Amino acid sequence: MKIENFDTGLKGQENVKNIIITPEENYRNKKKVKEYLKDIIHSGKLHIDKNLNKYFAKNVKVNCFHPINEFSGTEKFKDYYWTPLFESFPDLERREQVMLGGTFKDKVQVASISMLSGVFKKDWLGIKAHNKMVNLRCCEIHEIKDNKIVECHILIDTIDLIFQTGILPINKSRGAEGNWLNPINTDGVNYFEKDLNVSKFNLEQALTMQRSLNIKPEIDCKSDEDLKSKLINHPQKEFWHENMIWYGPSGIGTARSLKGFIDYHQLPFRKTFKERNYWKLGHYSELGDGKFSLTAGWHSIQATYGSDDWLGYPPNNKNVIMRVMDFYHHDEGKIRENWVPIDVAHILIQIGVDVFELIKKNYV
Image 1 (cartoon, rainbow, N blue to C red):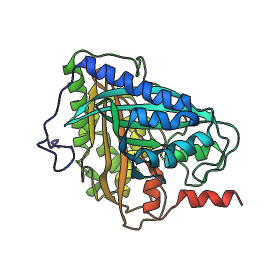
Image 2: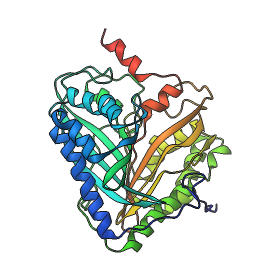
Image 3: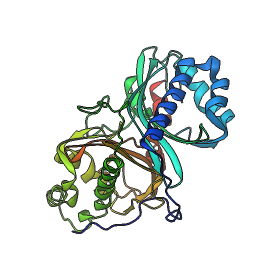
């Protein structure tokens, strides 16, 4: 089974020239965006107008998780995202777990995994407040230009928040629920890598592994046992560390080892989405930064919901698109950890399951 080599970036941008920045510039960009976001969170609602004008372009393009979704401009950013967030979690704190940066094509980007922690004081997105501390799993990619953020991609795991309030509105996850771990044996936030070849190698390792996923044994397999065997011996096995951890979003859950990953996510996913195109639009971000790499697509995956194996809901053969980020930690020559925010609520509503309607039944 040969891994095909092809451009995984956005379609129509194959010939866009990839700009290059120095490791020093990249480190400054990470520090800058970290300070921007921390200042906004810790200054709170009182200083939101000043901070939005200071740190974001006026016509900033924002791509958010469902049900906030996409819009443009700092005024809508304030009204749709920041103000409700601060009103619901007035003592919010931000703690980063992973932070990496670099360039992709003609864009300079900084990405992060962070935890937003605070007491849930006021209903948010229809989720009923319970006046207890919660942790919002938040994954972001920000494009910066002229010292301002010009485009944002933000995935907050709203299903995880719903679970934290004690409500389980969707089918039980196959994998383990709970907070994601920090990177093992390394600092995922304050590191500096001077050797560009290290960053390039690790990004290419992640991309080659992803290209291997285009090899689809599920098309011809007659049983789960046969498919599992083929996935264990799939070309992907060359890239995963023996102690790998795949951190999935709530609704899917986390798994350890390639076997666990296959059992709890990959095998049921492949059975449900036999008809799928991983790069229908392509990645809007591909970054390598030292021992870390990132790829992300906003509607990059298009697939047909063909069985109940993955999420447990009846198949309807509807086409769905997916908002996905993949953060990788490379260690001992392999991919050791993979944090994967996916907008599960957005996938569910496309197959006729509205999480935010379902939770209302618990509040009557």
